[in-house]
Image 1 (cartoon, rainbow over the protein chains, first blue to last red):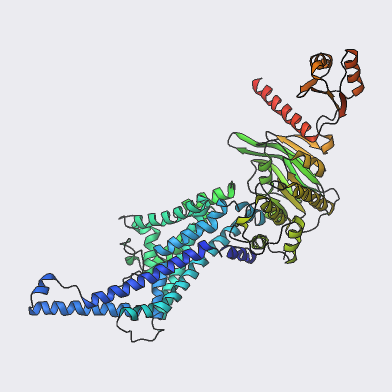
Image 2 (cartoon, chains in turn orange, red):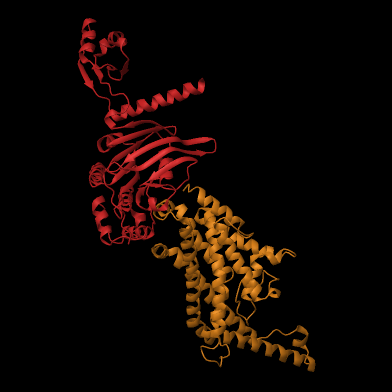
Length: 315
Length: 315
């Protein structure tokens, strides 16, 4: 199995992988830069009701003071989050939401779906006929790329975010650089589980799509569908997206958009983190078990995938 | 690191098929195929397009499951990934990871199969005549170079059995001669080579035994020289003025008129043919006795099979 993982790791050193990972990191940096400037702009001119802008009543002075205090507080929170210890939360939550899903969809498409497209699937299966091992190696390698990208994103943000915050003129955070490291580590730990789920969906999608574009479309499409379903009353709580929301506990943090998930999912918070974890793990186990032809609603597609993969390789 | 066992040449069958059948819906791609290939042979597998050659090879390599029947590879009943892992293979056009170099591709393939000694890469490169172009990506390779790389990949780790589809496809005449010599050397060293090819002259020169399949069924099997009709034929060259008279005189045998005043007479005595022509007042320019080439016998067998099929369908 280690030899197989070594081979998979070697295949991952390609422009598609580092190009996509770099794009995700650049996206996070861009968001941080925009958030820092938005926070500064809001601090300089807080949102004041029109009526108070004209009148100078005592009530309006109170409203203006409140607005200025709120803008300063939000800017302070943004400035604090821009410190190396805290900023890991941004990286983790981004990778556990749509940017991470997009990354995994692209990697799964190129790394696993592409084996059919480039017809290398025959070489692969002639050398390692134990298909369970091949699937496990693919899943693990896609997952590792997701986790590595998250760490790279954290590192890049840790280096750049304090500079961005200072350049934008955000209030200086009076905390040590390692402050918030625990929160970031916790968010990263949770994100790793979610990335495992995304990787399992991507692996299953590849065996159905049997091609790079089809895999990317099925992976992204299935999770986007889960996001849409999550907002439907009655069945929303059954959606994997709801469990991801509950497990990650996505919440606003100053001006920094820490995820691209919670705005699509209204439920999930009431489930609690443990229920969320159970859901995510059940989804993960469901997809994996489905590939072996055994289990689960979210794995209906994966059951079909496993069946087709075991039956024929018509690359 | 795995080292495959060396097989002796004691007559053990390294490939055995018993009533092997593969159906795609109502179409029988391979029908009740019985085949035995002894160790140390170069075995040719012939058939027209769509005869079921590649389907058979895919079944032998575990890429598709047979509908019925049984196949044995290196003494193991399929499906058995261990038997397939011990077999070097190249199916149809060899496919590689285009963003990797030759050496990296070989390293990845070797690692997928459990690894091999570093010296193996140099050995297979030398055997297949691959030129050393350091760091050049495989996507820039010509078809001939890809073919050589495919053969090199198949020979990695000194497998006791090679299953190769069209090994000389895309090679120049010097390359074809080199691969022919290589296959003979491998067989002399105890490696069994099972190859399909459309280049019948090559098959005739290199193979110990051949099997011909048509419409998924085995129609002939044996040494190339003993395949199909082995009667001598007489080729007669007549001047244009005597062609009509010669046609009448040769009508007592099964004779075909070819282009350029030539007749091909299904008879084993040139003297008889010449005497008949002289008695009728026709002087031949040349009378030559010849053994049919493998190509002629192959076409004859396939034509008979096609005719039989049509008659059966009409009946």
